[in-house]
Image (tube, rainbow, N blue to C red; front, side, top):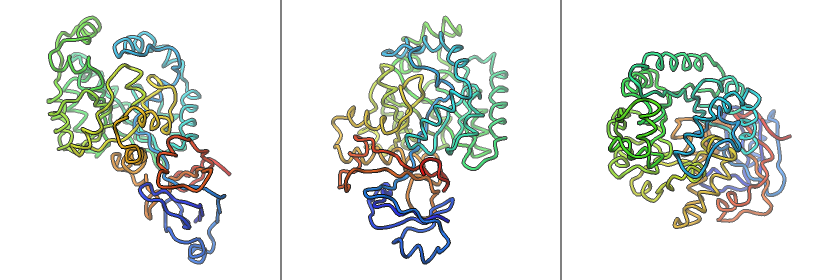
Length: 406
């Protein structure tokens, strides 16, 4: 048992003061320090410095660790140019990121306060690094392939990778499933994968409506994707449309990444089925895609959370940076209310979307916590200041174990 006594606690919905937290793997009690000392006389006590803030660890629900070698190899500004550059440089990027490279990206996330992440794994090359990570990991084995003739081979590879992730037996590691996107996965494969998701109660994610090219291809088998599919895959028609794709997800609480080109009918379906949209503002900007209409999501009661995407479409894996970019991109949103929503989008809302017992400083929750060193007493605009000023993170706890700090 440990007791930590900060000046302030952000729960993340409420700011508390003059209270301490008793915890082992989970948070046992929140009460005044002297009360906790009496109740847990053998606990190790840590009294923090002035203006210290304890808050939940951050959750990055969508990241591609395998592409962490990219810095200047890929083309930005237009989605199709980026996609062709990924294909052109894929072998160098994948081959250029060994276990050390991937571990460096994971450690950088830890340094920026990310205590849980969702790794979308295309090849399984990141399994070892994720298995050895200090963080909690939702390991999304990705299924991709739109050609019916390749379905059996692609599904066999997917099952092999999924089984390998299931062999990882450590606290905080969760095998899961990713369907790449409606344009890139054949319905036969989607149905087979979702049977596994249902039978084994696995977490589920997919990319959805990221680009205008995807919108046009799914609607009319035309647009910028036409040449791509004809030239590379000898396909002149989409194998699936968006309505059909979302119907497959009925009964599953999925996390749909991007959603910036989703129309009203699709958003209504997403709302009805209680799916979550993952907002990746920096990635959307770099690839020349739209800005997510968060007001529309709020109006339709759709939960949204914030993630970094991978280093193939970002320059760092830092949720404070991601929130800052979003805060400025959504210039019509009320500043304080939106800042608070962003903080929730990387803590409790992300935890709920992933169905994890974390994301909150609350009794019974996992002890995934950060200590930030503020420069003065916080006020009602704390959420804005946390996003703008990037305070030093002096300690990181994951499942009650100190992973950073003295």
